[in-house]
Length: 141
Image (cartoon, rainbow, N blue to C red):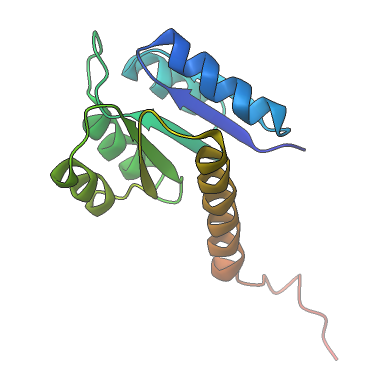
């Protein structure tokens, strides 16, 4: 089953571009234009990865506030921040708040795919490392 990736950006062309790049590589994608739609989408079905724009115009929460909200409810969910207006301070703030990575727009498709692959691998490793066997899972010798 392909990884489910949510793309949250107020610009339809960016959502479509990112979605198309990821779908071409076999990922399943969903999109949201604002924080409320993104939160509803995560509640409906938790994605494996989120690409999130820093500046969400016409949205109740901006990208950093949405990052905080998602990390509070889903601490293990990898989130990659996207920004066309980013600076070092914004990137550092996003990483300190729990973002997996920060990508500046415009970006190259190979960079986007590499970050997606690494974020998904990192998340899978964290889940497997935190797994603890249940007594019913352990065979007695």
